[in-house]
Length: 606
Ligand code: ADP
Image (cartoon, rainbow, N blue to C red; front, top):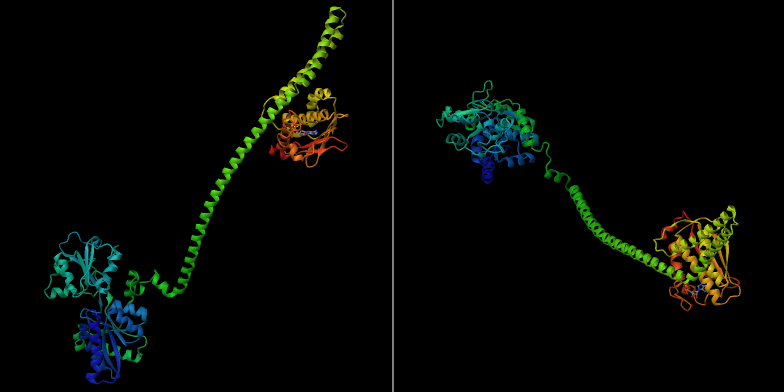
């Protein structure tokens, strides 16, 4: 089609000057060739000739063009005038500033509309609303009279022709086919421009009574069946740069064209009238968002790309880079999280393992300490027997004395009372010793409480007195007073003291030291601790490293276990203190250890 039009256009442009050898300035009239170039030339060339004859300064030529070609030619300014349908004119007016100089007058006037119709016997189609879900036929999708005028009315009744019809077909030209399709029942309804039905009826092709007009309207002075508002006919327009004098001359010539001029007859019209108001057409396009208003309120991606292409590209690039970076970061974070959680599991396992091992070690240590205490007590049994002997002997003596006096009847009640009190006191002393021994050998969980250290030292040493005396050793107390309470387990503390005192006794006995003194010294020490020192006048420490001395199973004694010092050390350390051994100035050895003061936070090491 385009090629055919182009050929005709070319023929028109080339042939005219050759034929007439007219050397006047050419004035091109771009004509919308909606029925093909041939038809356009046939219809409008006489009008061009009329103008050429009427205006001496210019030679008018018709250029039949398809809508896109017409648009391009106007954009380029390649035409002087444009002759096109109402819809297309408004589009070009809005886009390229062409302006109408006159409006076409047809035999029926200068305005027209569209008629929407169905077959008269269709009882189910009486209103536009009834068309929902029905089949419909129009001339062309872009046709002004061929669809758009009807579309505006359909829209006003809530129907979108492209969505709400069962089918929407287009007949093209001749538009008469729509009337036939409706009659045959091929479609339920159709639309075309006004006057077509009446023309067909006049030509005997149809009978008007076979049709029902939907949404019928009446407009004063308008004689045809119509369903829509009315719009002005085709305008004759000038381009923005067309010389005003030429435009004026053309307008005048066209307005003066007689009704029956050959040009009017060839074009099927009745001359021209003053330019009409095309505002209703703009309104239609605005409502339907078509033509110049297609982009109204919706900015297309293509528009954006055209206007901000490089910015969009840059932003997209940045987004892509950012996205990739984000992705990578997320991956790294995920991997790191996995690693960390693995490491964490590992740590938790290790910590649990350590706790378990520590608990086990603590248990074993307590077990060992208990066994050692039992052993120690066993070794000290004769000492205890001796210790117990004293109060028991005293009890026996007091009791016997009392019995003797009673038998002699020489007893004063007051005297007897004093004797019995002595008996009770001595028995109490024996009981206390037994209690201490039992407590010492009992197997109990360590209980850390605030203790009077001096008291513990004195009572523990009490257990040793008998043994010390047997070996000719003397216990000397040098206890600082007052002394802060310590935070410790009493039995464990006693065990350490017993170990150190026994070691001192044994060392002095073994070496047959001439002076046998054991000094138990308590004193406040630095950093919230108290210290106890057990000094002896024995042979001094064996000539080996002090660490060896504290090792388990190191002993220099026949029958020694070598556990006393190592157990003592672990007890002291579990209390947050330290056990040290040193030579005593002037001979002998000093064993010292520290303990945290009660209330200090170091007990948690136990
Ligand atoms: P045991 O008493 O069973 O030998 P200990 O661990 O109590 O085990 O003592 C380890 C060794 O330390 C002793 O065999 C002894 O050689 C030395 N020792 C401990 N106390 C003294 C002390 N007061 N004077 C000299 N040597 C000591």
